Length: 197
Length: 94
Image (cartoon, rainbow over the protein chains, first blue to last red):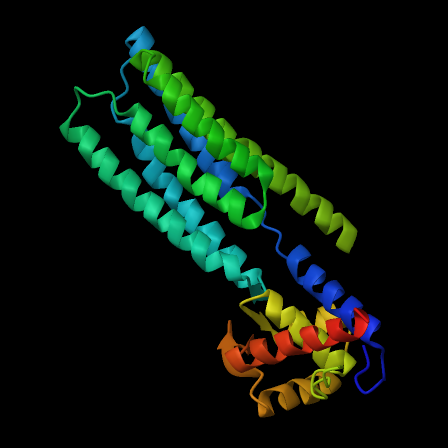
């Protein structure tokens, strides 16, 4: 691209559109965080369901895996940030939404620990929908918008179902909110890489 | 009546860089170079012109022991860009 070359008003508008489009298309996330988180939620939910249904006993609370899952999340997050050559306007908003989600999950877990007689799985499923829906809406990524809505629909269903069934519904939330959108993002990233080669 | 086009923005490379910076929060020099296809020397000169008029901020720092140049559009730059687009539209809508 030269600079002092004269160009028409139409060419100016075309250039602006082209550059804004280029910047937007550059925002490609690998989706690893979503895949990892989705896998953990699905795994923990199914194992909890197996424990509850077949009276299996594991020496530790399987949901501690979610805490361990944060480590690769942080690692991949930092690595992805280091590789990126720009910061988008949406990133800050999305980061704050996910921080808020993490805090709410922590408080809800604490609440569940102190009120074990309540069926709190509905609360978790309701919370799962929030960051997914917002992220999808802000980035225009439909699978996450749909994932968020499905989490809320499942949360409503869970009000009328048994605790055992709710654990399977929670696995479904993990699948719709993170795992499937994560796989789609990974596919897009791979496709983008092939285009760039 | 036609509005006058800002001469600082009505130049291909500067307008390209500003369009990129409007779309992101901040970007590395290498990102702008890659997307505009400009040479490092030419881009550096044009970005400095944008900085001189206060349309962008340029920050230099080190990342993993390598120098990194970050560019960010200023509020003045956003207003200038907006005015430029409006002026362009006044031409194209006639």
